[in-house]
Length: 173
Ligand SMILES: [Zn+2]
Image: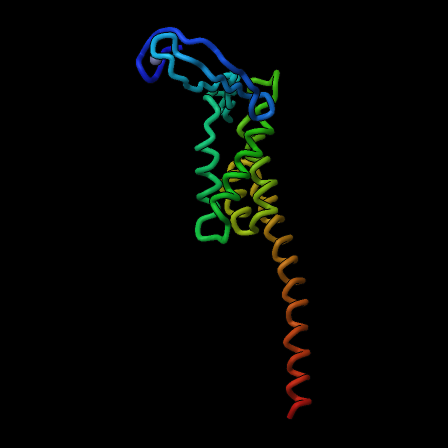
């Protein structure tokens, strides 16, 4: 390991310790040229993950593409960037399994949808309609009906509150 301070070719390792639950190793080194100390980090190269597209073409998994789709779906919705990033992180962890170097775009899409549904109704429907456009239009209609039904029930509950306060003000008069 070349010394970052003087450029000398050789250094000796003083101390090695695992970091990030063993996914990385931190080494304290001393330069054999200038005797100054520096730190290096070593981590395993993640095995390449290929995404199999609908037409059978393959491309390397690109986290930023997945995040882009989520950001588009969440446009103007009350969802923080941290929440979107955490969602993509979760999906990536899920699809990066040892021994499975390939994943279908459909699988990634399903995993994103599953999590968006919990995060924001509108973002979920946007993502689902974009993603499932070529798959099944009927199920989207069903999803929207389910959401509408849920909203109706929520509104019905909320409507009970003003009724009570109205009664209160009538009593006051
Ligand atoms: Zn040096």
